[in-house]
Length: 266
Image 1 (cartoon, one colour):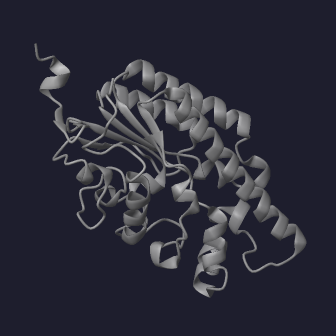
Image 2: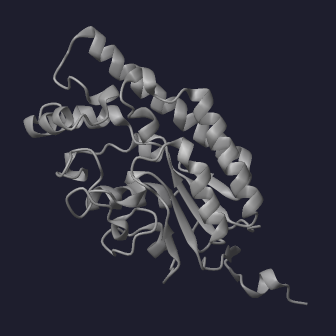
């Protein structure tokens, strides 16, 4: 007797071809919303690494062979405190595939002292993933690591336009304040902020592992990617441009789920 699962999965060379998701939900902050990827201080969801339709980006949505059902619930400025509400939207939409990239805004607070503490970040992420697993037990979930923010400073610190944007816009002050300073206090501050990013990434990886086989993380691929200013929007010298969104899609998708995934879902 052919089971419902067998009816929607085709055996090819020992691998199971997973059914194309009918609905996907992209969760996170301005990176996932495609902020400044196509214009002046606007979100450009069509260029999102996760759910965008722009073929030049090659998002998870397009690589999975989806034609519709790409829901982007990411909101610029979101922190881990906002993830639970976004999960609620994904559950309500009955998403079958969910991507998460969160934490950059927890680091890019007003000051180093107001960055989200690691235990608070862990509690929020763990509770959000628990709600996602309860609400969507059969969904596949992909969790991306946070980019290395110190790499952004390294890429732009010698560019006077980038330094001007960072300073006048007060962009990610914990990392990018006094961008041309080589004083010991500023060098140490940047190192501490980078440590916080790495701490958050370890939390995200642990939380995904605890979720079970329906969750995969990128293993730090986004954090380790050696991006340059060519990947960064010239509208603010902070957010990924179209090339940056493409790089995010490239780095993440190869660590996630594809059409010939050998694991049974659900």
